[in-house]
Length: 261
View 1 (cartoon, rainbow, N blue to C red):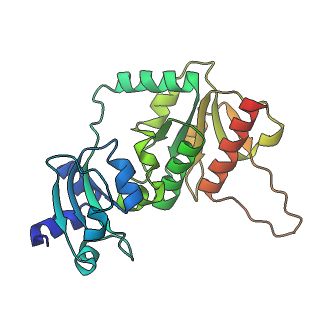
View 2: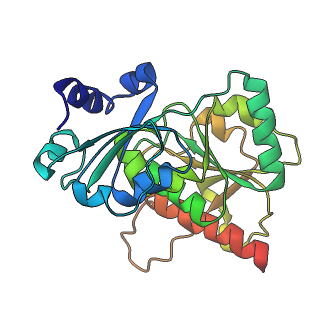
């Protein structure tokens, strides 16, 4: 059983300002918690007895409360709690912006990076992080206005992939301005070139825009390779766009296909 103060702490971590002030975030479920424990420092666990005895290694010094399913429901952000909830320490953010940009410039020179320009839906952000993991993309860049990747909903949607993908919160226009001229910056636009007919490189930045407004004007002006996923519908009233996570999957798949073609 856990205290009222512990319940209050867990519930407060739904909000970004409290995650930042406490330096903590929440994850739930055996798969997600198990994978995050390999990368992030865990400070607290509350779990069902059945999870505790499933063979998971709990690091020394981690506070752990064994609770009933009803008690777990009190703190869970899920409709159906999944045996375990954990509190992890937020990773330390780099203070030296130029150093962070240098790392990202190197990453974009060596491989593909995904940049999210104001993607606001937590499910979309989490799914894109999961896609990056699937396609072997190590770095996801989040511009201002993008959903906080350490919110409970985003963490859940990553299904543990956030343990293997590097997340960078940056001023995206400033970062793109710092890219060398030979690093391509791709953006998805309705008037872009057909992605299926492009000779896509093995490096660069892929910008995915906001669900309703697309890529912002400030970022669009820095995109030097405009691409589109063509619409093959035979109907007069076509879908006007793809979900941003679905579009990201198509784009990443095409880049990787070209790599091995």
